[in-house]
Length: 146
Image (cartoon, rainbow, N blue to C red):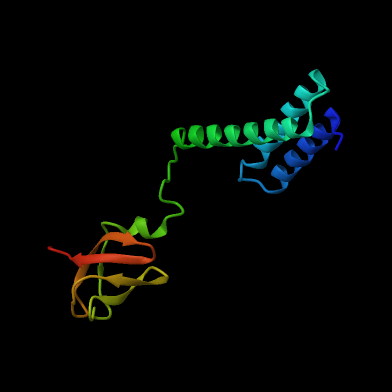
């Protein structure tokens, strides 16, 4: 195999375009940067073998992706609606009245336009309950003390 620097730059461009077509991954952009950097290294040292080129590409790809993920986790965006896409957590603390009893620890609860599966102590219909937590798609409830 005889790679030239511009081969890496074409790969870099293709990976950046792929990132644009698959937004939100922030993965291909770092591979594209690694390919671009490998092309620059090959431009400066044109006698590098393909093994070294692929090693540079691989190491820079993995390192840049790991650095980005570490950075992005520390710099999580602040939102004015942090529970927007975590619908069940929006109900924690709210009080509802059971339309159906809870039997063997499980039941159903109508909340707005949705029926939720609930988990809690056995309770008769008509009991006021408070949502105390969420486990996936199951609301954890307890009797409301008031």
